[in-house]
Length: 418
Image (cartoon, rainbow, N blue to C red; front, side, top):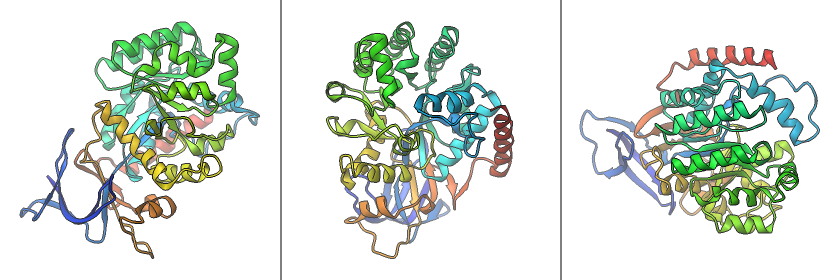
């Protein structure tokens, strides 16, 4: 049992601040309790002057891009979103092997842990290194102490044979693990592969994790190839019937598609900085069920404080969300996991914040501080499933220096191939 002494606990729903001692149970499906005294000789952290809050969930990540920061520029400067995929991300994911997948996973897991995220919903791609790729990610995330919900990005863009390998690897993984059926996007998935993915979703009582209308090109191709729009196509395949389904981006959708989504069980995940970086447009909550909108990073980074702040500011000229709307969107990441009974995000996932601002910080102005002033540097300790994985901003389960040497070595190898 781990104890947090003299903590100020922030209730994640009411924002009530309460000075307590907290007993943290270790393990999956475990919780916390407030205690008057800490038993002698028990392991504890003195949290005097610090705040304890629920840790974060990354709602949409791409660990395969974990080695991308600082990589060489593309051979051709991309002129549109399709060229960004062709010259940057599809060029990178084709060069991944087991070692660079592992290094990417370490880079991502370390980023998550140090930024207070103890759960990652990931969307992986490595078309020429598919076999056991999700198992490699899972091993690394488990080692660092990050819970996970993984999928492989199935696509026809490299041929039907590779698409089938993605389907086979997905089925193998789902037989033993919680996970989702990953698809790249409608415009790279033909009807045969889409049908097989829908069948897998049903067979394993799972959901689909797919990019939807991130760029107008996705809609243009869908209308030309299938005489319908992307959300309509997914609806026709039954993929929106599962509350486990996650649709990434959903920027270029019309009123009918918004209505379909609002009345479906599927979740939509916003990735504000990625949208800005790719110049694809702005996400709007208008016409959607705000309780089914979650928040991700799209592989840009692993900092959910930063993503929440970006969503708030990017939304101001679009639908002008309130502070509460954005924070609830961040909370929806937890709700998504809870209603679908995914394991690894119970109450014993916590962050200890060493946040000492020049103005008063209390339950009445928590949202203002969170969305205007808080930084991940405030995260001092991180507890995942009751186990301390970051103490005094240092990882506890791995040799960080050795791993950083490994990630740099693998990053350079990967960059040399680009």
